Length: 489
Image (tube, rainbow, N blue to C red):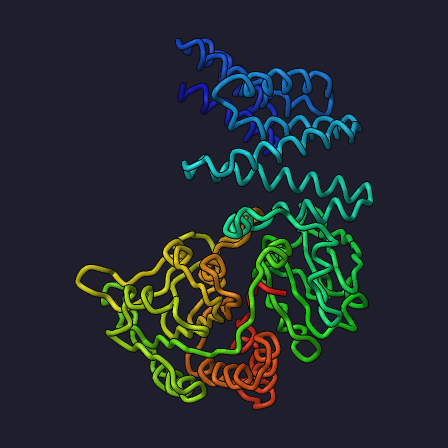
């Protein structure tokens, strides 16, 4: 079994590399290995899997043969315990129909593959299978969006982009439906525009919604971390010019872009995990400002991290703005105390260490260690919190918006976990921050909140003040990482 699977994978790999002689050799070896499999059910499945690999090889020169092979594979998956593999086969067959210029059949396969994925999503616990499923989902949505863009069906393309995003967050809101353009437009006031991106392999699709209407723009570009801001914002410049606030819904690698850095002088900026989440979350805004401040949890010696020198000043400054404020500091700032107290407050300010990177799914906030607990509060722990007061959460820690920039279900991060727990807005960071510089900026932010500004306007004002002070404060590396991550329009 292992040998057959290994040779089948080699067929796909060598084909992708363009090593056609090696591919054909692997194909022959796979057939021999499959014939040696003793269990009939496994032998049949391995043959179907190899047929699927062969279909990708012959797709261009003999699409009819490829369709025959993939149809056999699809029927086998539907009628066996291999249904998990059906979305990939439908994706391959849809691509084959595209190669044969049969867009309608291609669309039916892409749509069926997406439906199948969504029916399976919650039932997949195995991490390897879930990772493979998400990769297939990304490809399916990319193909489906690209097809609707070619048809110039902006509404269908937008709704597909929404279906691809943050389903885990929508499930939190009683399995809320995916929003359409009309739903989103109704939630935006006249001073707000929404800009949503869909990053495809060879192009960028940008949707802008304002004043009840949507426009779709397509840019022929292979998006990367170095894609200039002009490429991202230029096509919608006129669409958003009259708006005071822009809500961005980024996709894939664009989830790491500091959009506010480019618009700080002209617009207040928010980031949302999806437009549908904005529509689904109905949060009543409260003027009550009960405040919990968590400062400098005593470092766990095992983490090799020291206490942050400017946090005590930050805690004093923020506490003085809200007075009275509940402060838990140093060794008293344990995870259990935070879990028990956080649900009771309208504003939560965490000033301490956060641990994250751009690839793992194990980001955490560090609380004080106890005899029974390491002090690490992982994303999954945060998402399980119940925050009934829909608080404003400020995470004055490194990389609290940093995570794996997936195309499906969004970028998991500490900030997103707080939205899942019920927060209305999270102030997070895209990269590591200097605690001294952030203390000054965040004190300014809170003063604007108390004065009645929205989080987006408060952060914009605090960032402008930092720029006006000049020196290191004006360096974008010190003010641009802060982002308003929101669940409300």
